[in-house]
Length: 172
Image (cartoon, rainbow, N blue to C red; front, side, top):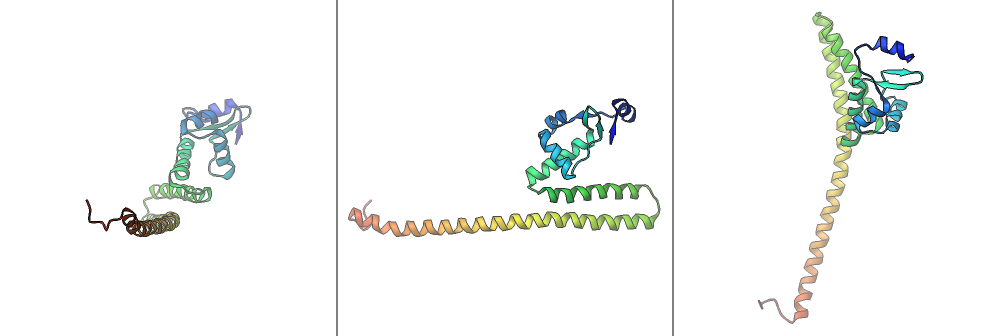
């Protein structure tokens, strides 16, 4: 969406909008990373103003924080993040549909859809956990091999050390 600054002011009265540089500092990302997330489709700025660039609102900042958390803290790929964010958007629409009606059949349908969505999200997370578990198992196996090698090396060197001293290990 491209608009003039005046149109943005009229449209977003009461909403606070920030330029990309300020948002980058607030979230702890670079402006380049934010632009990349936009290009990838993970984020759409609240407003794009001719001559002023992109402007972001509080929901954009929250979404960027979530992207950062999923990427840096949890280790999801951008494709996995896109999948999770898509389900977030769907979840919001389901919530709106649920609260927008008192019809029990519609609400039941919405809840069933929400359950399917939650199962989809859980499957994404479980796939990632399975990958992490496989890496962990490989590292645990390497550690076990190293401990076995150390035990074998320690056992092999003890008798040699005693023979070099000319003792059979009874002297204190």
